[in-house]
Image (cartoon, rainbow, N blue to C red; front, side, top):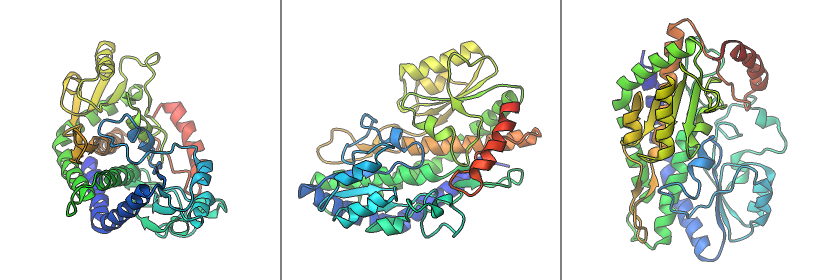
Length: 391
């Protein structure tokens, strides 16, 4: 069974729903945010949930137009800086966001599975019972919905009945951030009316996500080899210079407990390493792939065509690292799709790996989101199993 295709199909459903239902709202958000920025207001982004977002959208990310500066994780107190005339794009829902809105800040809320919103069934989220946490509808002037199930995972395995596996939150949030950045950058550049940069972005992204199926045979072979090694005691490592894929793979709701950030002092022959590449031939990525080969570890590289992919044991192509939206005043296209595609490829590979493990009579430990009732307790029990087996 191609579990990788199941994940791919569910990811495409999310993107299609965003294009159909949220794109018009996003264009309106960009218009309002741009007008406020031109009038002297602050324009900030706090779209951080989804694990990989902070690293994926960092200031030095190739293709970053720099029009939506991101606040980091610990920014709750910064909402006190916002006032009338400012605009914030956020997926935070604490009371400080609501207070900023009441002072006249325009708040565009982006829903996430972890936090209360109208699509989360009552009584399912721990966050629904926290008086400090409101719903996205309560804090926002307009809400854009992520269309990701409240449990977060997209692939259901009968052998893992407690939670669907392989999260979809990054698919939505990465798309939202780059769509909004494309639209705002174009409007601030005084580009001609009639274009839809956000629409252009998601169209290219969806085309490339569909093309991810071209990697299917490599995913099948790589997942089988990875399962063989992990069952025999190999460890599962993840590396990326920019760390976005590390944050996406390690320690997250509906993800596996096995993947860990690469520790080059601890890895050994028989291990597995997934290398996420943002650029074709970065020396740091090549060093990891070559060291894996010399060590006897199995490497899977995810990224653009180049020496990193050609040097790895298995190569998953993301069809281009550069930005995809032309904006007047920028020497190169802005807003890359590669982070989004790399996340999709990571979870396609993971879904197929879980299937291969199950074929071998082994069910890997999966994190249950701590936003779900019973999640923390479940994870503590699963950690005991993981520490005993290593997967």
